[in-house]
Image (cartoon, rainbow, N blue to C red; front, side):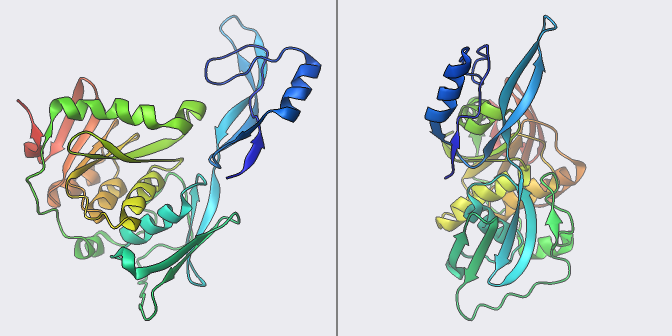
Length: 303
């Protein structure tokens, strides 16, 4: 964890963002003496804010960090993804799982993540990894988790459809998920510029939450944590994402065995088709008291 000088300073307090230090010498002393241990996911940015009365306010705001992460298997570079630093080992594990490169956490001998934006995954001896031409290489942007990805036909072969239909969730509990996720989004509260993925159990308990500038990275980190813990399949859990539900979000949930996927925004047509085909319940626009159910509504207790 990096140690940074406090990143926010202004003449007027804005709740959750600014610290009031009006005297110049006080400011200098403030910056010299007040140190904060911050997560690697947040950095400073100088801004000018125009207020309602037309006046200008000069301050340092907190911004979400976006940096490249090179994912390696041994000495071989698999991909470079644009992500928010933090939980890089989980990101790598979730990425390898969703790409069907590893299927069991015991196939991973060690994950080494340093401060050089490189994470190296060492697999167990004698494990033969064969990467086909459809699997993605190069740089993956923070907005794209499916660029150059394995073909959909290959995904169908690698990840079987959800078999269980026993898991059901009550509407009251379902509607409680967005607020619980928001309360756990510490970086979003400070920056307003980061996505989140939360894994809930059927009792509406938030088990894992991860944040990242990329939706797909946040999901990789969340399922990667569960994967490394040996908790897969997550067949009695629900995945909630803070953005839209695109195809790769539903696909990553399938890789982790998650039967219910929800988002606070819209799904794509491919996400809906994929969820229907693979026996996943897909929920969009989950904004209490409303939501839309697009597939396998039988898992929602509507009474």
